[in-house]
Length: 165
Picture 1 (spheres, one colour):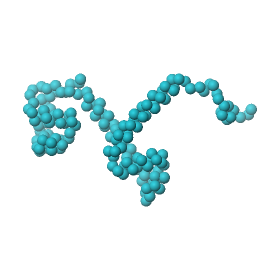
Picture 2: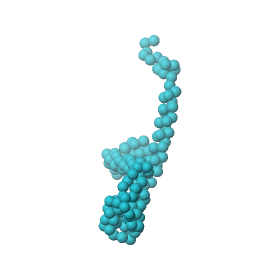
Picture 3: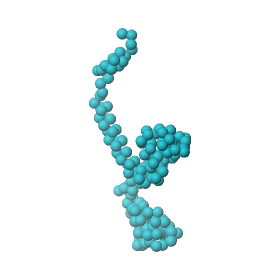
C-alpha cells in the first residue's frame, strides 16, 4: 500500500493510459515517412566514398557506438570516429537537401522566349537547365571551349524569360 504507482510497479494495466486512436494513426504516418526517408538515404549511400560507406555501415551495425567502431577499425580513436561520422552525415545531409531542392525547382520552370535563339544557344540552354550539365560538361559534349559556352549562355539568357507553369 505504501508503494507509489502500485499498478505500474506490479506491471498492471491502467485503463486511463489507453492509447488514443489518433495517436496510433499519427504513429503509422510517422513510420511511413521514416521509411520513405530511409529509402532516400539508401539510394544516396552508394554515391559516397568507400570510407564514408564503411563508417555508415559500422554506425548502423554498432548503433553509433564510436568506441566499438574504433575497436573494429583499429588504430583510430573514438574521437576520430566521431569526427569522421559527423563529416559523413553532413555530406549525406547536403546531398539529400540539394537533390530535394533540385527536384522542387526543376519541375516548376519553363522558358518563354523573347527574341530569337540560334541552334547553339538553344542546345546550351537545354543542356544547362534540363540536363543539369555544368559548363565544362557542355563544352566537352559540344567540342567547344568553356569560355565560348559561357559567353553564348550569357547571350541566350538575355533573350529568354523564365515563367512558372
